[in-house]
Length: 317
Image (cartoon, rainbow, N blue to C red; front, side, top):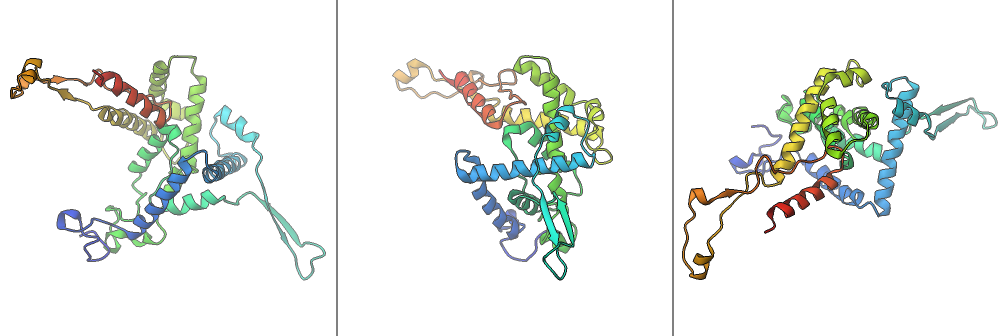
């Protein structure tokens, strides 16, 4: 039985337990839900501070990669990063006397508050996402699923220490690169923005189709060479196709796909007659042709609003 103690808390629900794999994940998850409440309320000071910390650390990471010549050949990204102003950390070393410093060291490796928090929580399998860029979040999540090395605490794929593994204390740092400040995430986002910028002015539907076509083919990843010797263009294209299919299917199911209705006759209602619905009397209201189709270039909130309006227009009598 995959658990770290013979206690009902860790026993699967089908065997009468609570089905928890790790107390660590439950405690950290509760803390993150509180943070989520703060960070999603954009008009508050805590949300501004948390978002600013993420933004500054992302700038620092991009600037360092530029200095190390590790940025892919994305012109708009390179021009943007070249204009970043990065704060420095200066270390002065004295020996015996404070009159003259023995050495000075200037570095840029100081992490911001949210960077520390994301580093700790991502190791346990909790990934922070910016759903204003839902497409990028879904592409990154699909890469995590196919990464056989990335195993969260309590994962059934861990085969030692009673199926919890020795990583219960530290977790897996493999998740960090897929987080919102990890290089996989922000380079994918930069590539998507570059593709959109190069597209000729089109309608929203045409832009979605063109972007989807490009992301589903390996040549676009070969052109930008995002992750040399790390993630192959073929794998990136295959994951993009799967992520886009899941993207559309999730919203399709949320729009009550294959919803049917049956209507009683007015005469039966007036005469208070009991009616038994017949199979041929049911009518499908929402099918494959009129189900909601999301846009891959807008935020999750905008897609959700469009879904609600679509259902109102479809179901209103």
